[in-house]
Image (cartoon, rainbow over all chains, first blue to last red):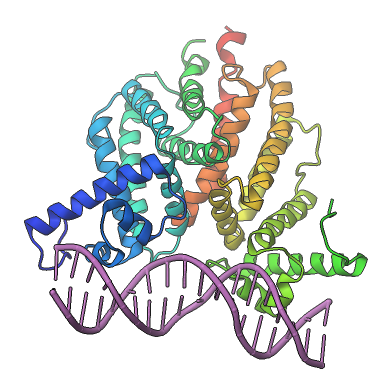
Length: 206
Length: 206
DNA sequence: GTCTATATGTTGATAGAC
DNA sequence: GTCTATCAACATATAGAC
């Protein structure tokens, strides 16, 4: 999982993890303002060159920070690990994550910024975002399809598309929220789930 | 509407517009790759300094390019002008715009990039995005509320929130599409409208 | 109004001492 | 493994000639 690292073994890898965790904390609490390598270096108590000793480039560094964030979030809330969540668990987990994001504006900013930069296939975050999105959607589709079969969810739209919509709303609401922190991201996500579940009476009941 | 411009009058303003239109074409066709002022300058046939003669800064330049884009789009599709669109017209217009965006990846990229940068209240695009979002939502809310009163649309979620969701899906789908151009933005937007309209049988009919 | 030239700043990355 | 020092590569913005 970390094959391309240099001659450094356990010690170096541990330090690398430590750096990422520290960077995560700093960005979360102090925000991301076009964060440069130097800024992160200062924050984690290393020189700029010292920091880049552990990462091939700035872009890789930031990509790894996001990866570490996912890891931490997955541990806190049932992330990509939860293989067989119910739609209700999915709903609650989703809202919980979004609500939590409100407390880490710097990470939201970093995520959005990299999501745009990652459009370039040569950017290290390109594959990260592709894999992340695909992974999340697999998780969603699984839960959504089950809910659809149980009639607890609309079947007017296929689960794959529903998953994309859920992801899009989350990402899009982050943009709105960054622009105006008064916007209630969690409430809006919640409303989407209302839309998905409210209409099961249509073809089934009548 | 353009009061802060310098001593230049009609002539200068016309040139400014010409620059923006040209820049729009170039970015639309050749893409936006972290486009610098110099790149735009080359494209429009001016030196970098010559171009900045018409704009206070790079950030203002790019903001104005987006503004011009809105202007052009509003003329092509019923944009912010259409005051009393029906939900159906809204639906069609929305999908048409999104479909059109597929042909101008550079503009989509620029838009997304600036949407992130505009999180900073000091960025010239901050007010632009705030006003743009608010304007679009007023338009949507108007049409959505009317449709809700007619029972053609779900009333499980208030129109204001629905408008935010629609906006979020569009912005979020752009991120997904930039990452993977195979993603069908228009179809996904279409599915959202399906969600909004499919469930009107719930409380009303039964 | 537009150019050339340049001031000024910042960044990411590297070389080499310790 | 970490630092200091330094580099080259831009970028934007400005000054001043034409």
